[in-house]
Structures are given as C-alpha cells and as structure tokens.
Length: 253
Image 1 (spheres, rainbow, N blue to C red):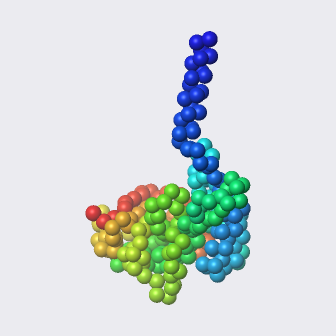
Image 2 (image 1 turned 135 degrees about the vertical axis):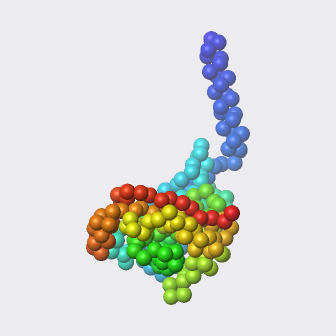
Image 3 (image 1 turned 90 degrees about the vertical axis):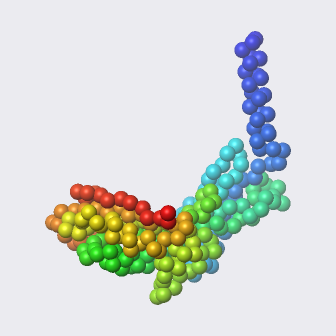
C-alpha cells in the first residue's frame, strides 16, 4: 500500500510539473506541409530557380511544444544531387483554424547561399594563400553565417544575393558574423615552420569581431600529391589524411 501511495504521489508531481511547464495554453505544432510550401516559395522567389521539396519535418519538440522545421530541397536545374536546408519558424502563435497547428510561418535561414558563395570564397582565399607564399596547393572552402537562433543553418533569409563579378570577401566579413573553413592539400616542399605564421599574418587583418576562419592543411609526399592533382582534374575527391596535418583558427583577439 505504501508503495502504491508513493507511486501515486510521484505521478501527481510529474503531471503537475508538466502542467506548470507547458501552461494552460495549448501547445501548437508545426504544420510540415505548410512549412514546405513556405520554404519552396521563399527559395524560388529569392533565387529565381526551380526547387523541389525532398523532406519537411519538425525539430526541437519537447512534450508537444513546437520548435522549428527543417525543409530539405534540391535545385531542379542542377545535375548534381545537392540538398539544401531551409529553417522555418512559426510566425506568431495564432491558431484561428483551431486545428492544433500554427497558422503562419517564416523562413529564418537557408544553406543554398553557402553553395552560391563557396567558389567566390575559394577564389579569394587562393589569392591570399599565394600572398602568404604558397605556390602549389589544392583548396576547398565552406562559408556560413552565425545566426544566434536555435536551428539557424547557413545564411539569414535577408542576406543579399552577391554579385559574383564584384564579390568582396572583406565586405561580407566586415558586415556579418562569418565562419569560413578551408581544407588545403600541399606537397611537402610547401611546408615549413613559418607556414601557419605567414597565413595568419595575411588573414588576421581581414577578421572582425565574431568572425572565424579555420584551416585544415594536409601535407603529402610529392608523388601522392601529384596523384591527388590528377584525381582533381577528373572531379574525383581524395579524403585520406596526409603525413602531417596542420590545424588552426584565426579570429579577432
């Protein structure tokens, strides 16, 4: 009997805690179909491309409380199978239809901008690395914006389309909170004890508050490096680490 009373008391405490946490107001859910529609319309209006929805799902739920939705899309005009994520949040807390779902939604961020910017960022970084003294290297890059919102992914919905002909990495870094990652492959003769210092000296003046540029440099035997270059000509990647890896980040002090 004591055990039964104990279980009953504990159950009542748990139920009361849940009630206090969620409150009397009904916890609304994300309508995944509407989220997909909002994401698709946003992508096609902003980028003037045709997209199709691959997946739409709610994230961050807790005891029935909605968090946000991630909608995955692809570009119909691309031959590759790239997928892009659009993050959707409730736009207000109305449920006029009384169906248990939020009435309206808004896009917070998308990762398609990362795809659009990566080649321009790569070109800018190549110039900077040559200024740092590198003559033979292979580089790939990624770029994203810090959003400060749960679920934020890629760049904010109001991040402007960049003119590729007059692209300025400096302008982006100065006006947005940016993270860039550079993966670099070099032959052994390019490596010396001053390599990290030379790169840092060139990159550091570009950095503003909250920006960060990270480098992962793999050093290979000359023969292996030449093989990697041949693979690259045929758009074949090579992911194995080199004989040595140099990893460091540059940010404002």
